Length: 324
Image (cartoon, rainbow, N blue to C red; front, side, top):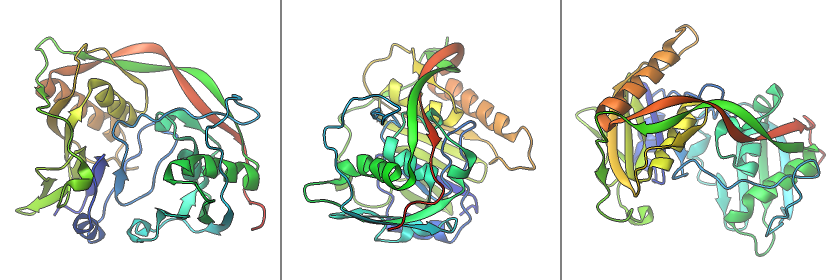
């Protein structure tokens, strides 16, 4: 397997066989240009089918619309932590379990992203220390709270223990429209509804002849190894593809294709992962992606100006939380 491997899965489980393969190799993570939150993980499992999240409400400095279920952690331990090593995701106790919540070596910005769930990663702005200061959280959920209540509880934790102050504002950003190219669309309509991924057996990614590739029953996602990137969509609407492209480009993308329904598609392109010593490599990677989008799917992006984007601004917070 190529030493450079990146896996992004949307709505697909990444099973232990792939995790084990990732452990043995160096995996690179590329955060989108201008992104508000860059996750420093060796493997990124994105359980967000379209990268579009519901917008959350503000605190005293934001909107006054109340949350429907306004829970707080019953007990929460917040301790300073070292930067992540890249293998934290292997811990079986990580994240949510019934009645418990644990996060290890997470930056303040990552915790804030979990709390607010911005529509795009570039839709949250914050001070530089917030992405370089890490914490470990162990918390107990109150009776009646579920995994769906975790975001509001993290938000309350950041407000109560760090004194977080934030607000929403509409900012005008340059972006794109996703349109059909002159050649016409080259997309296959999905034959049926998306399968229940919880019932799909086997890994989302498998290795054949030393080359990683998506398994037959895998859902949507991206697989990068060496200079090759495979972008796979299953039961995806065009607005979802637009949102995925927005995350990659670090700016808003609006669906203007006029194509209704859901589609299955795959496109592949070649682009070396960017590095500090390779000036302009990121631009080359984007160009390769857009060329593949047009040649293989019959879609293209047109620049547009002044797209309104709801941005969550983290105004201030204490670097040291109150004591447990």
